Image (cartoon, rainbow, N blue to C red):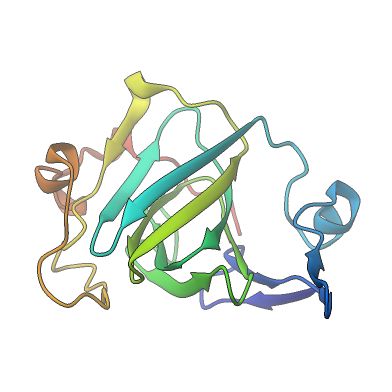
Length: 187
């Protein structure tokens, strides 16, 4: 497994080893001890999957309290995945990292707790999977506007995205009360 540090410490791109031959391929997508050695917490409590069509954009989501770290990947199809640092007091506050994940490249992306997360579907359809470090708490979940001009995320979309009402109506980061945002606790 190859771990690539991104421009924001703690946000990691993971390139698992893929073993393949004429029969197909095999990849170990999670092994607690090995991932923990690379700085990825070993306590995941919930797995989720989402299926979406081309042009669907989900995000930017987070919940606080009950902050969730997420290990995400595209099982099939291709997505552009984004992590935005929204931890109050962070030296990286408002910065984002984006990566392309696909069933073909089999890459994973670790989004630490305290980050807003979202992705858009680039292929005709995509099956997206994520492991979470805390359970979903709908009463604490909220969104940051996907096209917040202060964030300047460069979504690789051809045209307007397909959004939920919640994501379409989400506020910009500077309009969210500071006490709603998670605190920075280093790295």
